[in-house]
Length: 335
Image 1 (spheres, rainbow, N blue to C red):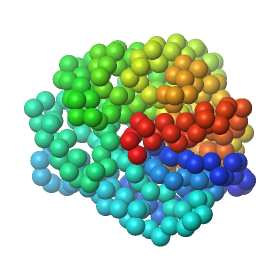
Image 2: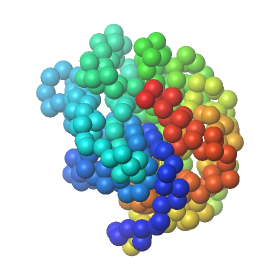
Image 3: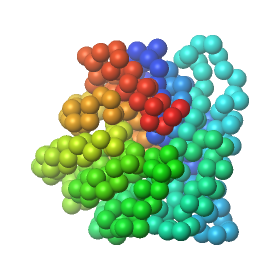
Image 4: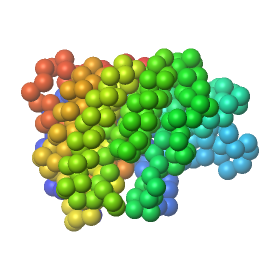
């Protein structure tokens, strides 16, 4: 896969927080390190801060099972310290992005153990822990998916899980998740059941476009159902939406399977309706753009992705743009 010819950066001075990226060393995906992240965030857009989102990397190899995911938080906290200590230029576009927050993973159905595990993550995070992602993504045909989810059966409906999500709110932590479009109704019910926890919905609820969901007719039918589900989710005032993550292979747009990655205009043409509907439902004040790198890197470059976001909202006011690209992420993740 070769990148599309690098586009000129649109509005290079616009300040950005990227609230969703990963770092890993994984055989199936290769490596994505701090240096790789910096190559992307330093490629022209003014990305100042980022939030690392758990990806089941860097786990401890021994010790109690419930504490093994703390290894990821420990490792990312050390990498974040490296990002803060890097020499910084006075030129905003030349600065290296700082990892300013961590959303970690743990099993929220652990019951009595959960408080101690969350305390261990908080200690390991060195002041950077902002939330937990115990994703609910689960599909009955995982073999059709490039990235099959590991959610529990009926996860969002489970009372022990709901108690875990409620504990996050009591501790001042947010709940991030990703799931598939056919789980949006269950997610809405979860958000209503735990109103005192701040929720962050990743990737639009992942409308699938592969396997039994492949084809334009299916995409259009799913979109109509998805629109209603997103409107219902948005009626929960405790839910915020990350706008991005629609260029994963399982979304089915196919850019990862051809000889070059997508251009900004291609992404806008194919996906603008999703972004505009989410913005209409949640309002600018509850949305933030995300890269979901390096997962979406298989389909589009970092410059082109953020160009696409800027094109989609080019007619928005300056205050609305600042909210979407920077201020909302800063507020939600307390950066």
